[in-house]
Length: 392
Ligand code: CMC
Image (cartoon, rainbow, N blue to C red; front, side, top):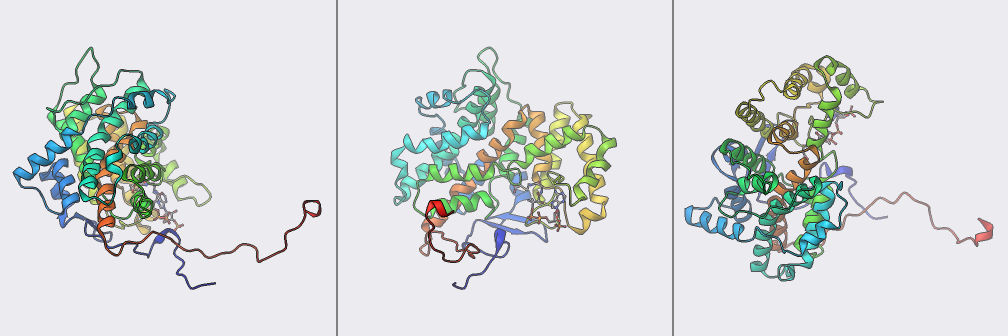
């Protein structure tokens, strides 16, 4: 009973008002607070984008310096958290560690769990943005059996993350501006994407008044799936499985076959029915990184380019408007930077944290905000009598 709109997958239901991100899927347009993603990726840096998403305007120099200071101030993790990491198996997936550790932050930063205080919400936002690189790097260090590396506050956000990930006591990671810039760009391109599955999850979790750390942990869980943030990892696994250019047609045919669950990973998007603007920036960045590292003839990249070419010429992919998405190229860049495949989604979570937290703040500040409570169309049994166990 009751009149509800049935909209599986929410393809035509707006769940909120938002002033943060706009996507025009037919035009291939993505903008944050009115700025094109291409401009932000080219001219801005991740700290500015974080400020923009949180506060609605680009910072002036003084505001930027203060913001960077605030983020840098919070890069360290409570020392006690080290023991928490050590409770995981060495071969744990970094996303499993991230879900656990980020959720556990609420047990360490009690002051930030008061969501009614705007000042505390801001501190929680800064803490999350600042600590995610530390947590992701620690998850990586733990998995490879190396000692944790503390943050270096003299470095920029991306360089510090690369340092914490790749430095070892015997040899400090050498900062390369081209690679740091590429890392920063990956963060910018993943910073927000309006009401996708993980962001909607964060909002739904937050709508009950749950603390921000718990909400972000929920977002990380949702992001983990291969249809969402796990796609960049899936792209690399797919390229490795294809193995050689000659086998591309075979996999294209499989992707088209309705009886075969295989899909071309890194292709297609719920909203973009035109080229994903992030994919273009990422493709360019990918070439820069491979040139810098002398990996131009990297077979995996050649394979990726050929796959893209063949798919773009294919009727099936054209008719269904399946174009490469951001994850198609980000995986290759991350591999070139030295990250193992299992870290890819963790990096996505790191970058998306600012989007999640900006959306969470926006929701809490919305006077019309109510607890998220979807309805259903019941299709189960009608009312019946309870049978005693011996009569079943
Ligand atoms: N390969 C082959 N066929 C595909 C693909 C693909 N990658 N994507 C969609 N299709 C087909 C699908 O079979 C369906 O065909 P039909 O209409 O004949 O049944 C049609 O295209 C529409 O697909 P859909 O699954 O109904 O579309 P959706 O909006 O529910 O799903 C998607 C979008 C991104 C989950 C899907 O395109 C997909 O699984 N892509 C591969 C995974 C991937 O790259 N995900 C990353 C998304 S971008 C980053 C992020 O948001 O996290």
